[in-house]
Amino acid sequence: MQKKHKRASKAATDLRKPILIIRWGGKSGKSGMREAEDVRDEFPCDTGLQFAEFRDKKEVKEAIHTWLINPDHPDDQVAQNLYIGSHGNKLGLFPTTRSKRSEVLTWAELASVINPPKRPIVLWLGACESSYAAEAWSQPGMNVPVQLIVGFSGEPDDNAVTALLLQLVHMSNIKTRGRKPRKKPLTYLPADVRRLKRMKFKKSVVTVHYKFEDRPQPEYVEVSKFRSRVRMGFGKYLDKRNIPVPKLFDEALNSSLWKSRPKAEVKALSPSSPCDAESSATK
Image 1 (tube, rainbow, N blue to C red):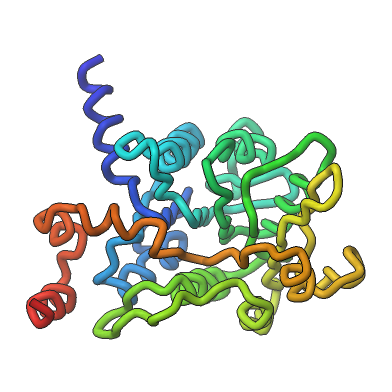
Image 2: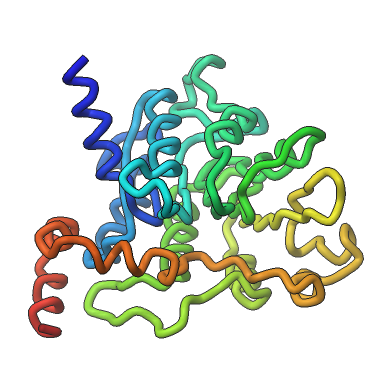
């Protein structure tokens, strides 16, 4: 019992970051984990990214739950953006093409794990047919605290998954190797959505679904279809309803948490030489 307690405590500490990138299945260093490793290479100085790799569905669910409730800071929700890279279909997500039905994390199961954070999060899905999450969560009785879903329609190859994740993290206003972060965070304005939609791949299409809540049953509407579904363009809808534009990453929400971290801890989270050089230069 004591050993389990220590493992849970360590997980809680490791997962207290705004962006959680989960790779479920695949082999580390091979095509199955390449998108996460490419992000590590591109963003070695960032302390807002947490990477995790799992084989078991139970581990994935426990990690998401721990990340959302943030036991170290129960009054401050650190969680903002969740990425899950895996295989997928209309039923849900799973680790390998040979996975049994019992190993599938259904869209309903994922919804139950995400409930209920204090603030809605943004969900990034690097999986085949991950756009089905929007359809599943628009069904009667569903009300998932996810404001925006970015995923795929079709079967993205490894290059497509990597390109989308890198673009999303770039848009999250975090620090890249040897560069300074943007002064103002990019947000999901219509222009930013168009940037995502312009990404073209052979066997897949990037989908961006926004949660439309002006009806008794919330519906995730593909932003390019807002005019036909809602009779109003996406940008005009946000402006007219005076809805705060959801940010990919809001530093203000967590600035006090990052500033309160011990210097030794921050250094441990950013061990690469470019980060150390940049840190010493700013002292």
